[in-house]
Length: 232
Image (tube, rainbow, N blue to C red; front, side):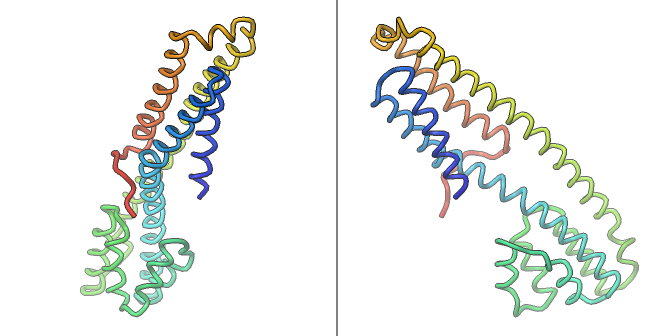
């Protein structure tokens, strides 16, 4: 819901800029509707998949760490599973609630369908080997835990870089809209003639088309996701 409100506000902003710079209410409405449609139909699914993958990556990291530590101490799958999922919320909690009747090992195998990280099948094979053959679980899983920590730190660093680039990107487009507003109020004596000038109007339309295409390209670059329509 928050995402939809953000896309609505962004569309209203650019629709308003289009109206202010061209004095054309129909063009402002077209820009607003076009932006909102593209943001909802094309960009929202990309961002949604990215946020979902990021969330699950954090969830599987926490789950594996807590499960292995608890299992090494208690040697109980039931207790380890409970300790690893005690802070679950949102979609993860719904999934866990739906598999309550299953045995601990069946729950772990079922979570293969939920966690989409390559590290989870390795974790599952280590747990099975430990339950069947015994041994030192912490030693058996040391390489896995080290890789999990490395991946978590790497993705956290990348996320920090992405956020900085998003701020810079947004700032540049915001400044560009201020330039358009300056044309409206700074050159008010020529404004009426500008809004009736075809090259000016075509340039304004090109600006909004380029901005919209830029948003889509940046969303793909930021998330690393490919375009697809949202699935119900």
